Amino acid sequence: MSERLGFPIWRQILLWLVGNTVAGALVGISVAFLLRGTLEGPVLWISILFANVVGMTVLLTSMLFPRIRQLSPLTGGALLVLTLAADALLGTVAVVLMFPLFILRDIRQMAAIGAINVLLALLVGTVVYVYEGLRLRLAASLEEVEKVRLVEARLREQAAEAKLAALQARINPHFFFNTLNTISSLLEEDVDEAEEVLQTLADLFRYTFKVAGAEPVPLREELDFTRNYLTIEQARFGERLRVDWQVDEAAREIPVPGLILQPLVENAIGHGIAPREGGGTVTIRARVQAGVLRVEVRDDGPGVKSRDRVFREGHGLHNVRDRLQTRYGEAGSIELLTGIDGPGATARVSIPHADVSATPEEAR
Image: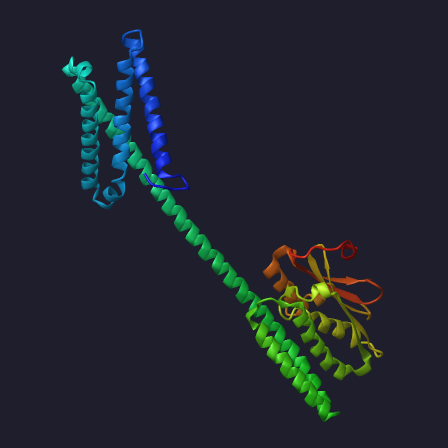
């Protein structure tokens, strides 16, 4: 018997005594009415005492169960039988000494009671021993299953982190390839400006190294990174590229995956600004609605003819979608919308943030 599940040993002993007493009383009442047709006090008390002899014999022997299990089956079984039989006989002798006149008037009856007590102790003790063994095996199995579950959960987490890092690594070369092209074109026109762009590029490199571990960063860091990226793109497009920032203060500290915003801006420039001779405007919005961070990048270009083409594998938006699904499941998403606030296309990213509660104004 051991203390488990917050069930104190003293309470187990008390319940065991109560159970033995009730069982003994029922046996005594049954015997008295069947044999004599009336209830006799000594018969009732002796039945209760003998029931507790058997019960306490099993209880005391159960304290040896852990050591018995360490022995060989043959040795352990012999020790269990001897312990149960000896304790049952000792308890029987104690009851006889308490009621000598009633018991000793029939020696054969006393011997039969002693034998019955030993047999009952062996039966109940064996059942309890087997039950405790099964319980321990079940507990060990459950513990092993829990360990396996924790290992599997850790492996899944590591796999998800590796996938996030791989997806993020696929975005970086594409971005830097375009940036180097911009610097190359600037070297022929304005060396000083090319140097400034190179310095900005160095800052961008440092940021990408920082977020290489695929850990979330505050949205404000993504905004700063994107602002530097846009500085390089504006050096390339000049006045053809205009930027409108609409970012709520409540959204700036919300954690987001690193390099989640720049691919949206790059897509807007590539599809909405670059094809137009007069350029256009990229609008970047961030706000919180009903516990969800929504980041939108909108251009006022010709719009998107094929969403499948934009989300094709290897494209920046495809990688963003995969990273959101890997980290947030169905709760994270990216949509490509048209006809929102006029012509052009809007890429909208939704990231759950349960700690934020939306105000009525934000929810509209």
